[in-house]
Every structure is written in C-alpha cells, then in structure tokens.
Image (cartoon, rainbow, N blue to C red; front, side, top):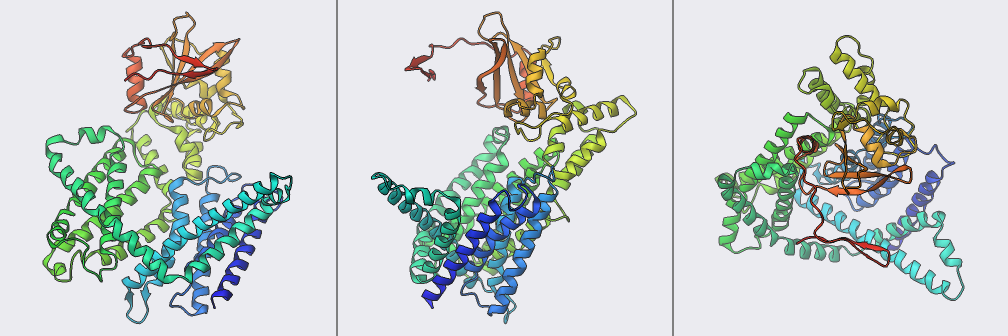
Length: 572
C-alpha cells in the first residue's frame, strides 16, 4: 500500500510539473490572462488537496466529488479576481485577496474532513489531528524538496568541477525543474503519511514547547491592560499601525493558547495555580481586540474604506470572536467541562465564519474592491474630502475594474468648478502610470504634472524634470509621484549650498521617504533619499515643509570613501 501510494504521488507530481511547465511557456497561453492564472491556481492546489485528503473518512467517490468541487470553485474565484482587475490584459491580485484564494480551499477541506456525518456535528479531535498532520506534512515536504535541490546542485557542481557540465545544464532547465520539484513533493508527502506516529510525536513536542509562551504573552497583555489607563492611547495611535500591532499580538496569544489546549483531552501543562490564573487573565484579549477595533474604526472614519482596511476589519471580526469565545470559558457552565473548555467550539465556529467571510469578500457578492470604491466615492460626493486631497490614483489603479470605471465616470463631469476640478484630477489619475511600472505610456502626462504640489508656491517646475516624470520610460519613483498626484510634493531647496537648488520629492505612496534629485551634466539625476523616522503621514510632513519647520543641519562628520565604497557616519 505504501509503495503504491508513493508511486501514485510521484506520477501525480510529474503530471502536475509537466502541466505547470507547459502553462508557463509563453506560447502555450497568452502571457497574462485571468484564465491562465485560474489554471495555474488549479494546477498548484489540486494535487495538494488530493494529498491532504488522504486517509479521510470518505469513500473514493465522495473524496473525488469534494476535491473536484473545491477545485472548480477555486478556478472560478481566481478568474473573477483576475478578470475584474484594473487591466483585463494584465490581471493583478492584491496581497489579502491572493492569500485568501490560496487559503480557503485548504480550510474548506479541513472543515469537511472534521464533519461527523452520523452525529451531524464537527468532531474536533479528528479536525485537530488531520489539520495538524497536514500542516506538519506541508512543512516537511517543502523542507525535503529544498534538501533535494541542495543535493542536486551539490552533485552538479561537483561534476562540473571536473568538466562534466551535463547534470548542471539539465537541472537548470525549467522542463526538468517543474516535474522534478512536484514529483519530489509528492514522494515526500507519501513518505510522511507512512510515518504517522512520528508526525504525532513532532506535533506533541512542538505544541508542548509552544504552550509555555502562552503565560508570557498573557503576562504582557495583562500588563498592557493595567497600564493603559495611565498611558492613554495617544502613543499607540501615533504609530499609525495600532490595529496591526494589536492583532499580531492577539494572533500569537491565540496560537499559544491552542498549543496549550490542543484537542482538550489532556490536562493543561501548567501547575494548578497557573492554569487558574491564565483562564482568567486571558480576558485581557478582549481589551486588546477592542482597542484594535477602535484604531481601525478611527482610520476608516478618517480615510474611508480601502481594500486593506476591509480585510483588516475581517481580521478584527475574527479576533473578536476568538476573544469572546475563549472568554466564555470562565463562566461556571463551561468551567465544569474543564480548563478553557470553549477553545474547541470557538475554533470551529471562527473557522466556519472566517471561511464564509473570505468567500464573500472574494466573490461578486461583497467584493472588497467594490466596497472600497463605493466608500471612497461616498466621501468625495458627500464633501468629506476636498478634490485636491482625494487619492484618485488609488481609486483608478488599486480597486480593479470597479475603481477604474468609477474614475472614468468622474473624468467626464461637467458643471460647477468643483465638478470640473474632479474631472481634471480623475483624467490625470487615469493617464498616470499604473502601479509604478516602468515603461507604461502616459496618455496625457501634462495634465498629471499640472496637478503636482509645488513648494515654494511661486516656484515653477523645470520642464526637463516634468518631462522626466511623464516619460514612458520613467522609473518607479517618478511613476509613483505622478500616480499619486496631487499628493506628491516637489520642494525646490538648495541642500548643499552650491546655489543650484535640488528637488526633494515626497508622495503618498512612500510617506517616510523624501527622494532627492539634482541637475548634473545637463540632466536631472536621482541622488538618494532621506528616511523620516516617524512621519505622521504625507499630510503632516508636507505641512511641516510648507510651514518652514525644516532645519538643514550639517553632518557631524564627513562620509568616508574606502576603496570607492562610501561609508556614512551614523550619529549615536
């Protein structure tokens, strides 16, 4: 049986690798189409779904039906996300959507494997064991594939050192690399399944060691909650990453709590007094998640919804369910069932709710890009933001087809002076390079350049610098400035005292970076950048520059040039 499975998985890996190699070839399918990306997603995850459903409680027919249905839905979801991108000929996927597309099939499979048909409820023990088995096998198979390639290259270099380059040339070919990698992955998975007892031992050791981080994180969380009334939230919110920091902490605490609880069949790995303390102290997660929600709500109130904030709200919602569910463990009804008895039911509920939420945000029903577009348009239409402060570039280039179509509608406005201003700014955003890609032609670069923010106000932009920004071959820094117009400030200032002013560029796409340009040898050249340690955002830095709150402080010591390599002095 084990040898038969190994051969089947090797064959499946070879077929997967050959098909991936064929699809990757430029002449097989158009270089960038939504269907091509859907096919790549299908070929990547379908074998993994087959591997992960091994030894499931299903019949072969039911297993094939489940894996096939998930695969079809994955392909359709990938196609939808790609076909509704900004440019139909070049589908693009934002990071949260891509992570969701790759994660939901595996989560769906895990939940279905944990469902007990006879009892019509989730069997948490089975769910726990299969989920951890697949997680460990995924890491193990990936590691073994890495070692496989390390051995191949070591042998190839050894033979190449005596003039035999055949092996090196062979493994350098993609036609070999794709099938070999996929076949090695399949074989590694099959071999891992043969060693289920070893996998269980690895799981117990890993979770047993991780369990002792739970008191550490809860201790920090409790200290944070106690100190919060005295410190306030201003320092936290000034980081502009409060929600991210708090969610990251909550995620770690939840992970370590699960390491201690495991499937709930064993006693907690702590002394009785520490177990009692942790069961009550974990309520601090309620405060952590609540403040994360407040921080996110403040950002949404200030800037409206974006795709990132929508996915962040999704994360806050799931973290809230975890915190509330785990918190119920202190109630007498649940304490009677053992230590942290709500962990298992909460995990199952959150997984199901998270799966449904992810599918909705990735589907036409509640597409995150569509929701963000509606929110931003409502802010603009309602007068919550002035047209010259509105980020038309993000609307046009980051919210897929929905944002671009909305920007195109705005570009045709007529009527009042405000409407005409909106139309001009929308046209400038549409004509600006997309996403900072070099080589993107600018249909109406002059309009985008005209909307740039200059300082001093009476300064005029050098025509050659304007041409550099709007050039079809503009580099990514210049493209980002033009794309974020009018939220790109160009400041003319003589930094080095040679009476020839440089141009300092600050734009909303890189709020802590101030690029410096200087005219040398008859052309404008990029010299480097200043990095602001804490910026407060584009608006705060731009306001400080325009208010004259900038000091040109001479360097304490000059730079050293050692063997043509510059070494800058960093003050203590």
